[in-house]
Image (cartoon, rainbow, N blue to C red):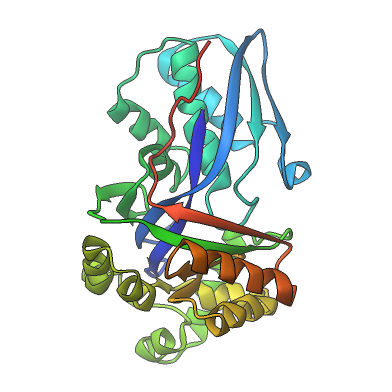
Length: 311
């Protein structure tokens, strides 16, 4: 199986209400050509091994999202089959690009095929939503607007191909920690609208109409307009926790990026390029300035999780 990472073209975060566990979101996802590959083989047990960059940072116990996908599918279908999973990492770990979610999406498809459970795509998407906010999108791919926790998807029309350079750091950021910092910044703001202007938070549930310009840019296949519309309410919180993120943001701007944004909860920085050659220029600028541990280039949108080989 192969499943892509994602970049949030826009991420708007509503307040955490009393007694609520999750923030309400409005986000626009784009799947990009940075991939996780998952191999599933029949086994008496349920295990996972991991290779690739930052593999040592990925747990292989029951907290691993791929193994959680195995257990969820087994429970939903009543099977007691085992599986041996191997994940080859391509998406940054804890980098805001949904690497763990890609593993879960690929695993759902892999075990559905291996165990011949025969679930429909709608049933798989419903199961994916129980595993995490990003898992349904990675299963679907392409470009989509997500609402709720991000799991309620509406496909978005997108023309053409967009080119990206990513500045990756080996030290990830905890998504819950970034949301806690977002809440702290929001609580410190006397005026919610002033908080929004400073990038510290929002006071009202996010409105999909806030991304009209972005959706128009996607429909037109206009990278210049898309770059101007990139947005992330979590960026200020990520910068508070990791001030060094200001460096790759500045490097990308100086190198002529059409737009630059922290991807999701960070710390990966995504820079939108004019074309494929410019993406290489941005990547070279990240490398030369020493602001990233690794640099990736990619295009989007791309399809979601899919079988690439079957024995």
